[in-house]
Length: 261
Image (cartoon, rainbow, N blue to C red; front, side):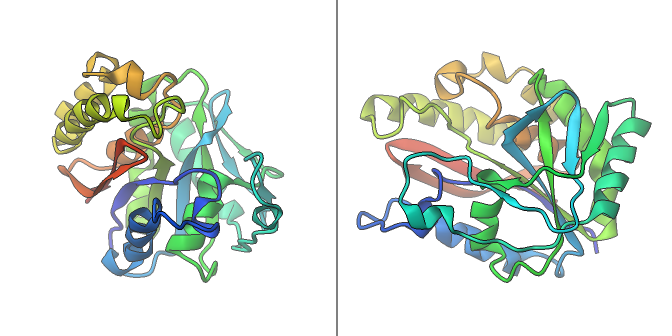
């Protein structure tokens, strides 16, 4: 059965595996835990795009047993001992790269790259058994939104092959803004625009997302685009209208997640 695609928030560092007396991450964790129950069937594999990996062209992890990349700093020692021992899938990595190349998009397979925290942290919540093969996909360092939509379109065939495409990022990502109430209204304005854009279909959505910088408070919400671009891939892999499936004020800023059928 055809798998949907999702744009999911991955939180802050290893946030879901630390003491959280204020319950900042409770709602986001609950959303991630709920994902598997919404799928038409258990996926054959997961292809997950992370804003924490930028490459020249797109790249895919090709290891049989990918290691973990603890790319966060200043957190408690136990967070550097977290494990997510899901198998990789060199076959899926090669297939995904070939789909992009066939579409005229530069792509490669990296046989040594591990899974960064934009991948293993949310997956450890959403798919804790770690028994489904995982391939991580990078974003292209040009940060060209139209290119990422086109990459998603090229990968759409994987959905009919039992592959769940996840895009891991944050709908608001300005480190200066988290916890600052002055950013609440701008983040809400951008979130409203982003939701309206996601809820469009096909070509209209692609056009809107290609010009995301013209949205209200766009650059205030994303000084750099790497945490937004995974959304372009999830959206590009579907022609159907998107749906906002998660929305919450986190650290004084609006954070959303989207599903595309």
